[in-house]
Image 1 (cartoon, rainbow, N blue to C red):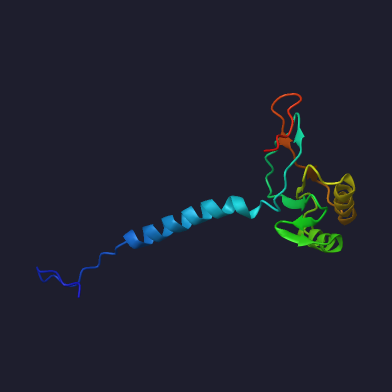
Image 2 (tube, helix red, strand yellow; image 1 turned 135 degrees about the horizontal axis):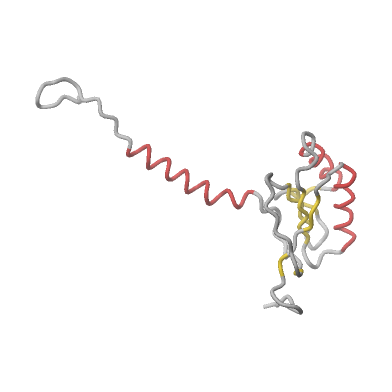
Length: 144
C-alpha cells in the first residue's frame, strides 16, 4: 500500500484530479440551473419602446400574471391573499427589494392592477413592470 520500490516509506501524494472533476461538474450544473431559478411563470411579454434595462444589486422578486389572470410568485401559482403573505415575508427585512411584475401581453389590465394593489398594500417601494423591447416603431407581435 503506497510503498515505493526504493523502500523510503509510504508515498504521501494526494491525487486532486477527482476533486477537480467533481468541482467542474458542479460548476457546470450551477451555471445551467441559476438562470432558470428566477424566471417565474412562462408569459409572453408585451413589446414596448425605450425599455429601461436596470442592473439591480439585489435579486428581484418575480411576480408573473398569466393570460388567464392567475398570479405566480416565482414558478408557484397562488391566490392574491397568498401572494400578499409571501411578499410580506420576502420584504420584511428590506422593502426596497425590487418586485418585477411580468404580465402576458394578452392579460387583462384588471389582473395586473390587482397584483399592483397587493404590492402597494404590502409596502413594496420598488415595483417594476417587465416588457420586451420593440426593435422598430410599429413592430407587431408575429404569430406563427
